[in-house]
Image (cartoon, rainbow, N blue to C red):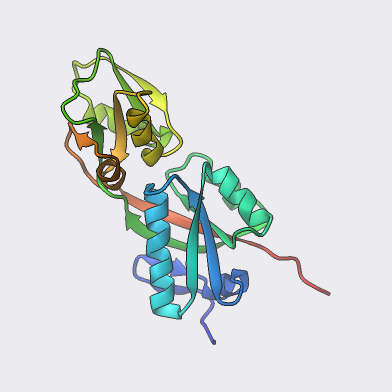
Length: 208
């Protein structure tokens, strides 16, 4: 299959030759942040569908408890690539890592974000809110100005929703897909975030 090295496709930039090199038998294994129905997993599935449609490159998504764990999967060849949200505070580590190379960049909105809790359950005072650190600025938008609250950090928006079910938090700043799956309902307005995503592949040493 002959490809142009780097092809601008509207809101996507894809170095398909680099992704072809990272794939095994035309199959790309993408590692990203879990648990199921995180914004990262949803974006990864979008990317795989895009690659299959435009280039015939098949793929699958594997989720991990952190981006660092996903990165290790790439390093030990359990995965072909790692997909990272550019809102993640540690993304510079992947851009600077000499073992990794940027293979794709694309824009894909997250599902709508908002504050969600169990149906017909009044949160105790102060509200205990599970939130991923990258979403902290949204608390000022979603929580009423007069409401007292404390924040508990979660590894993802999907994990934040699970913390409500596990009674570790009264509310979660989570995404609509995770809220729907776990039976939570929103008590605030919701809105998607226009997110930039970066896909990194391992640079394989040259065989001489």
